Image (tube, rainbow, N blue to C red):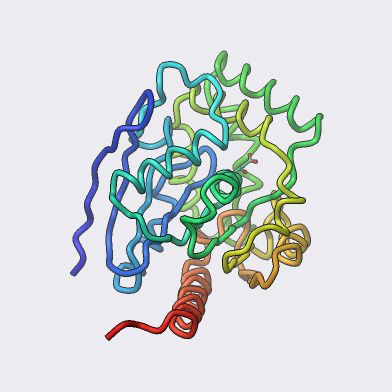
Length: 283
Ligand code: MLT
């Protein structure tokens, strides 16, 4: 049985909480907004015999406090935090990075800054494009509103778009757990992340420069990062594998974990066999 390590590491201005469980190739799981590592529970439960899962709460989310100066959480800053987490864990070799939605925005910044640390990339229910000016303005307005009124307006606007119709209807406990996590994130963190996402760069042109093996995963009913957009993202990355997850919306790993876990394992096996053929093991 794998026992999980749960602890904090220091990053500039604050600390990051993370869970570390399992053995094998490190798989760094980066959650979406305004969530925390618990959205990966089904992967953390099922995959530790096949890989080493490292699931942080990004700064300000879950158990990781927001830094005193963190009024804008840029995707670049969050990517730097991940690199520091790997340093603290003394993981010098390459990892597989898996990010969902905002976690995917962070993953794309990690690719930009730390490509040599990557063995593989998994982009789940995310987007490469920047916000339109209207979407960015709406985020900034929501940031101000949440600071005045709390998270309820954000949660009411986001929640109906997060799950597939089937998950929302048939799994009310999933919906309620999600609402609790979203409501539990501090309004300061929500505002800072909204400001950071509003100014994230457009990464569409950079997709063609991604050179590590890449898996693109999307819920078939994702209304926020729709399958057509994610398929185009996969088409822009040389050799990327594209998997559409049935009976899932924007949170595919949580809504249909069996299908997502199978896609992840198939991808990890593909990377392993590629490494075995390109790098003969020393006896
Ligand atoms: C997420 O799930 O992380 C959000 O949908 C990201 C966003 O607001 O763009």
